[in-house]
Image (tube, rainbow, N blue to C red; front, side, top):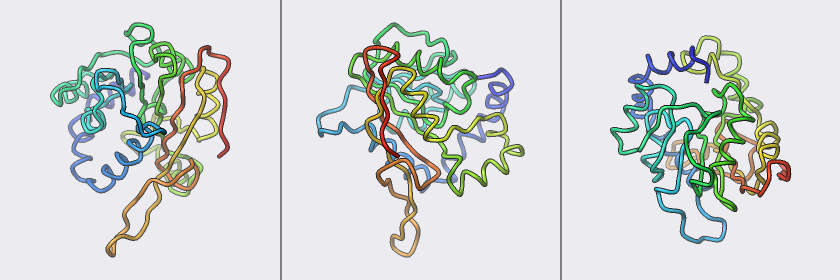
Length: 230
């Protein structure tokens, strides 16, 4: 993340964190989508919280709710919120992770990859610290969706997304493959009627909504990644 972006998030830490209190249904839906990709495809038990790392943990909202024990965050004030939520948070950048090789069973970028200056380098670092046959989960905002196109039109005026480079699902998959991951599954949020109101629910695949999540498995090298159909 560029220093300008770090400073912006640092100055907006309180307002950023309060967003989750003002948008409880949206946050709950996003949690369901990420949890769907964290769940093992065979239904087996998931790694301990101590075996999980969120890269770009922000104020720790997702990590605390999803049982992720460790976080990396470049903005000190954001990191302070995460620590207050019990997340063991280290100050640093995604391109230079201060963790040992194969330290984690699961690594995650939850709407943070778009703020990374060098996403391929960051994903290669995630590959390094993820154990063999471990997983990475990447949640992102799809710029090719209807809502994503609106976000692109308005992002220059956004205090958060003005410095972001929104990556499409195709771009995320290509980067994951280049970094040595094999894409296994994906879901997206789609609004459905529930009790007279729209309740966004995870749907299979990465096309059809703004908030999308991809799960990929760590392969043994940074050249043998694969891809999945949209």
